[in-house]
Image (cartoon, rainbow, N blue to C red; front, side, top):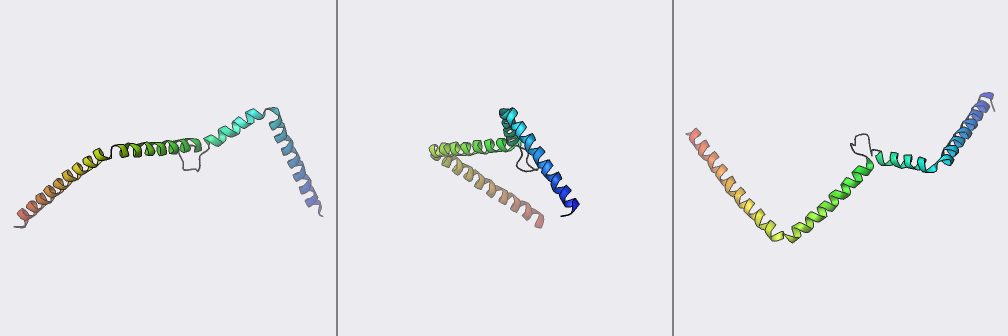
Length: 114
């Protein structure tokens, strides 16, 4: 084994020992504070560099949206008849409006083509 290799391994062993000692010391002093910092960091982390909201905020928003969808689906089911009448009326209005627009365009075209 070369001298460089022996020095490299000794340096690695010393570094690992110091890191382990520092981690053990940090954990032993106040584990609650360390856990709180880790939890805070995890909850405020962003899922990717392009996300605007932290992981926890995104998860909460998604759960609220799912509950809102479920509540709205229940409301739609309870009011299905009223909703269908409103949709049918809107479709009738749209159909009449479409026919009027086509007729107006045809009249305008027929004036310009003669």
